[in-house]
Figure (tube, rainbow, N blue to C red):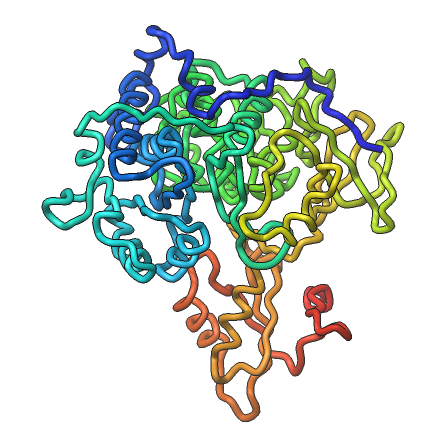
Length: 535
């Protein structure tokens, strides 16, 4: 049977994301600091942020960008990213956020698939951005370099060229329930990256669903190190924190000493992380040198958090540690434990091994291999099955891929996550394995099929397969390549890793290599990955 959320229902917004976040901004909140660029200390108030978003939207409209257009956004975290993202949406266009680690080839592929007519980036990424844009026919004036010298200097408009004109935001009309706000790319349950169509309603609904559970207040300071281009950072930081009128302390990338120093300096109250950061917080001796007493809670997501690791962080830092679950296709959050563990709203505390309960206005199912639904037990944990989810945050589908959409979202509206889970008597969910072949490396998605395709272009490789394995030193999942060499070919493990590294983004690199005589495959030719994972 399906099990619903134990949390009270919430009102699902029917407006655009911009209106949901900013339309009711009053004079008092307008003077609050919204964004702090941690390295420089530069602050942006809510009033100035909204004004710059409006001006950015006006400039895009003057350049012909509006409803029906897609704009690529390739940048690390910054105040400028936040303004550009919401400026794109305010103009009525759709933002396709691009991983800041992507190569020019990766960038061109996403821009082409999304049919983007403009790309926004920053100086450190302009080389690959310009190469990727040029390869698909975008002219220099359609590549905005936010911190660049400006269009008069190098042909690329900068932020001042756009915002400095002070053009009013355009009047736009669209249906928030169907109009796409964001188009991040995800490998979903399997295969190559696909555009995930997220509407204004999807994104606004997910903020509405998580806000009462996070408990963020206007006086909170949230450390924003999760990348905004990733749906996790986009929703729980860039959108949910803005709705709470909290202060985002923004880091462009993670480094441990900076992370700790910013918590101490800005007296951050909450931090959102992925499990690799938890490893450092639990084990690195430098943590003892910082005053982290302002922290009230840490939430981990993007990959499963080990219970012992979470407990070690909680004990060392003296703050609550919880985890949540989601995926890009769910905008992204579907299950979460509140920062008090669930005591106030549910009457019990979620174990750290769990990802919490189903969000408000949503239901979950656990379905076994035969298609039978598994009931929550009277006590203990249920049997395992695939986790299904239905709610207003479920994506509109995959861009131009009806087949993949139908295989992921059924006719009843349940999204099949591809993850194996259990549930306890309170409805708390525990992720125990994954059906999908996707590898999660430091929270990033690594599709094995993509790496296999690269390996097979090497003249010395006869066949190849890639699986995720646990690294014995770090405890993280890493991509491991199993390679069949051509007869009489000379090839080393290091050469294989270097070859792949030349063709993919850094986080996609193969980290281990094994040479074998043949890749195990089924009668239909499908790689038997489970056989490769077996020692």
